[in-house]
Length: 294
Image 1 (cartoon, rainbow, N blue to C red):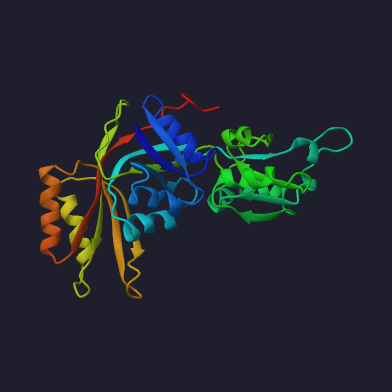
Image 2 (cartoon, one colour):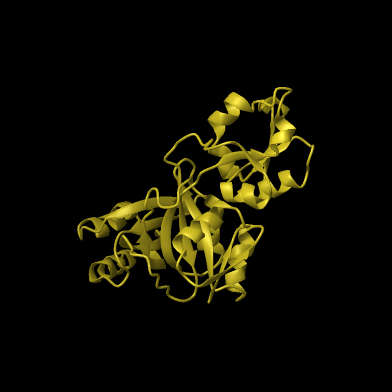
C-alpha cells in the first residue's frame, strides 16, 4: 500500500487525490503545511506527495513551484486537474437573523488559504466587504479554525468535504469568481507510478538556465523544440535565488522524456551552454466533468 502525503483532511488536495486514486490501495497522510508534505517524502515517511502547482484564476502557486525546483529533488510522477470548488462555511445558527435568514453582516472574519481567498474576490466584495480576511495554511485549516471558535463570528472558504469533516454548514455554495476554476496537481515521488486510470497524454517538465552572456539564448532554446514540432504547454520564468536578475525557465513539453526528438532537443540546448534539468516525465490525467462534481 502506497503512503501519500498531502495537505489536511478536507482540503482541495484531499478531494483531488480521492478522485485520482479512487481505485488504488493507498494510505493518506495529512500534514498541516506544504513544507511538511514535501519533507514527508524526503524523510521516507511517505512514498508520494500531492502538490498543487497551478490554478485557473491565480496561475502558478509560486511557493510550491519553488519547493519543487529549489528545495527538493523529487521527480514528478503524475499530473491531473481537479475543480477547486470553494464554499462559504460556518455554523448557520451564528449567522441568522430573527427570521432565520442568513445575515452575512454577522460574519466578522473569514479564514482560508490565500489562493482560495483570491479566487473569491467578487463574492467578498459583494457580501463580505466588512469581514477581516485571514490566511490559513490550507482551506481545511481555515474550516478547522472556524469550527474551533464557536460564537466568534468566524467563517471559512472551504470544500464541501472540509465542512463535513469539521461539522460546519454550507452558508453559500460555489463562491469562486469563475465556474471553470481548476487546480493542477502533481504527484511526486522517487519511484515510477502506474495507475489504473487511462491517461490523456505524456508530459516532461524541465528547468533551463540560460548562459549569462548569450544574446538570443531563449529564442534558440524555443527553436530547438519548435523545429522538431514539440509542443510546449507552459513556459515560466522564476528567480534562481542565487543572484538578483538571474532567472531560470520552467518548461512543460508535451512528449515523453524517452522520445528521441525530446532527447535531441535537450542535447541541442545543452550545446548552447544552457543547464538543463529534467524535473519529471509523467502521465497526465484529465478531469471527467460530472464524475465526482457536486
